[in-house]
Length: 128
Image (tube, rainbow, N blue to C red; front, side, top):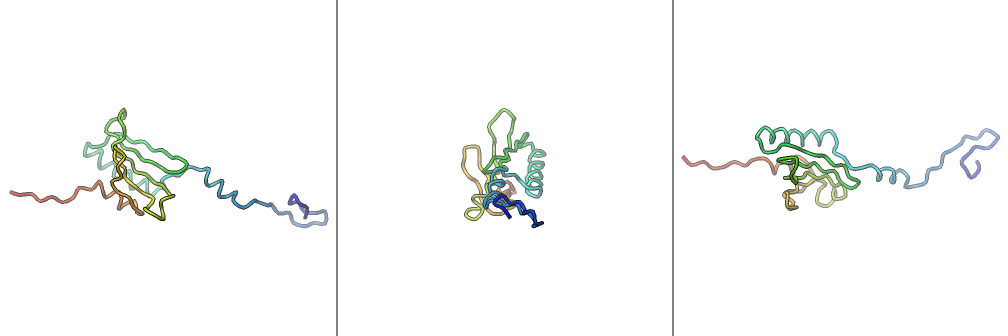
């Protein structure tokens, strides 16, 4: 085989040489996104909050380093909350987080369902 990866005239099979790290570079070029299961959980929560007249609009951003699901009361405002998926933090604090409008992180974790539980109303004591 010659140095360009072609077979010689005597019928050797040709091989394609791929430099190490090329697959990693290709993966790094694709933006981070929510998978189907994650998006299903988020949209179920969004539907409940729209029915409760809390949220009215949303936006999804797929950035090179993270994916963001932003929810709005009105489309012209800043987002009320952002549900963020950041794979770089997966081993440390967890890939998922809920961020309030002021930038305060309300909940962070490894499982999306537990992070989204911050929106579930707790039980309250009612006195008669």
